[in-house]
Length: 88
Length: 266
Image (cartoon, rainbow over the protein chains, first blue to last red):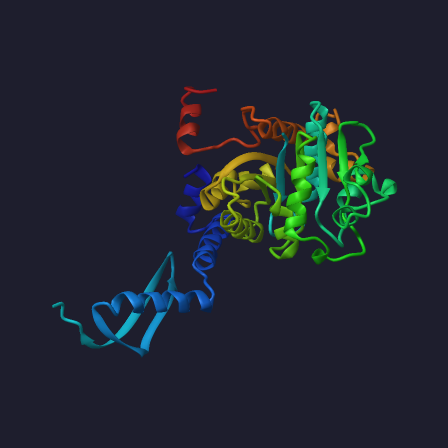
C-alpha cells in the first residue's frame, strides 16, 4: 500500500484504479467460468454415467448448475436417486 | 527458419496495427528480414500506418487465391529494404481466407524471412482464427482499461485453446501521471489479473499520432521519444535479448518514502 492509498483508506475514499481493478476481477470470474449450454449438458451426461455405476439415477429430475458468486464459482449437481446398486 | 508472431488484442483500437508497424520497422533496423501481414481483411490499415498505401498492387486474398505469387504482392518499405508488407484486401470479407491457407502462406514465408508479423483484426471470429492459424508466438496488446484487459483475458483463453500458449503482454498508452494519481491501473495490477509475462510498456505519447500522420512509425525516429525507446526495447526482447524495463513511474510505497525521509535511499 502506498501513502496515497493509506490516506484514502483513512478518509474512506477509493482510488478509481482500485474500483477498476475490483470490477475487472468480478467480471473475469464470470467470464472465465462461462460455458455454453451444450458444454453443461455434456458434463451432466458424464456425471450421470459415472454415478449410474453405483446408483440408479432419475435423469429427468437431475439438475446441474454453475453458480457464480463474488470471487468464486460453484458447480452444483442435484441427482435424484431411485435405488442404490449393491455390489455383489 | 523464421518466426511467425501474431499481434492480437480482442478489443479494437488498442494499438495492434501501430505496434505491428513499429516492431516490424524496429526489427528491420537491426537487419532482420521481415514481412508484415495485414490480416484485417475489409478494414485494411497497416498500409497507411506504414505510409505504403500508394504502392499496393496485389493483396493477401490475391496470394491465397493464386492470382499472384507471394513475392509479387509484397511491398518493400520506403526506408528499410529488408522490410515488406503484405496488405489486406479491402473489398473482400474475412471468409475469403481460411486458416489452412494462412498456415500454408506463413510456412512458405518463414523459409525466407526472419520474422513474419501478423496484424490480427479485432474480435474473436473468423478473422482472428485466420490470423493465429500460422503463428507460433503471440503478443497481446492491451491498454490500462477494464474493457481492454477483459478482452485480453478472453484472448489468452482462446490462444491457449488453440495451442498458442505463453503469449507475451504489451501494455499500451500507459499514462504515468494518471498512475501516480491512482486514476489508472498500473503495470502490476494488470499483470496480477492476466497472469502472463510482460514484454513491454508503451507510454501514451502524442509523437505516435504525429508519426502515424506522416506514415513513419515512431520507432525509427531519433527524436528522443519515450515511446520510440519502448518499442526498440520490445524489438530486442522479441529477438530474445533481456532488456531492463523503462522506469515510467516510481513505485512510492510507504516503506521507500520513509527510507527517503530518513535519508537511507536516494
